[in-house]
Length: 184
Image (tube, rainbow, N blue to C red; front, side):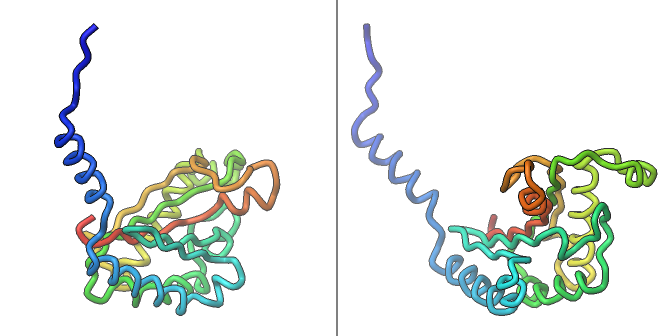
């Protein structure tokens, strides 16, 4: 039985390429790190009250906003206080924007009720998409570049907690803003 052997120097080159592919330039890292510090300082009240979480990733920043901070139960239109909260994030996003912003919406696994069905919302995926679109449109109205922001609804996919308890379902109803490093 013949075995194909990968030459040693090719293997080292391949390994080096994998390692370098995962690296972020120092400038990109520093830029994202400054944005991360600014967001955590600006949103300290919301973070302390567990309404928002800001996570620093290798080449991105993820802002997770609990659904109850943004939307009324079973709704997708943001009240004024939610707009005020989101508008505090915009100064970190909009000036000299080089980062793509991805707005992802999620729900729990509770089926859509008759009230939403009467409004044409027939699935959790549709509800999460309308919420993500609403947040995206608000960010654009506040100065975020339209060509640098996108929205996607994932419905009940990717839960962060068990849907077996009210507390877990509340954690799963969220909107995540991901600021990808420039060039992403």
